[in-house]
Length: 169
Image 1 (cartoon, rainbow, N blue to C red):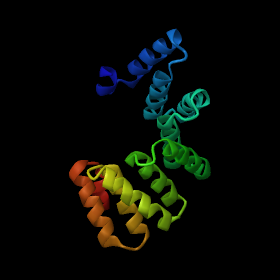
Image 2 (image 1 turned 180 degrees about the vertical axis):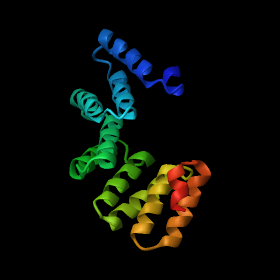
Image 3 (image 1 turned 90 degrees about the vertical axis):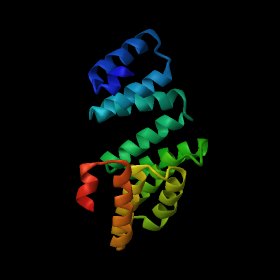
């Protein structure tokens, strides 16, 4: 954990791989390895690890959502992404991160009227989450409501000083 907090993802990856060498059935560590790989931009390797977790535990909602969101954010595989996220929501239908993921993939698909209620529900679950607020800003910009977009982006800035958010406002 301290390797991740220090930003030393290669060292954290080494610890996870060593752990998995001794305990190959530990899906929690396999999930963590997938997350570490994704954070390093090694998407194909991360996808392999998440798919291994899901193959072993088909209802592993964290892996389903992480892979689904990763595919939505970084690829054009939106149909597959949505299916994975919906499977995660079956396991935990009120988890704000999963609602945000579904709303984001629907936004990416241009399904704004479907995305809006999911993103608003995610915001109710996580009112100070800058990612959800940023997604709402993007949605309202795309829907032609710049005032609402700026309002959500400004709220997002209160909770995260992301340079990309500052450029939007």
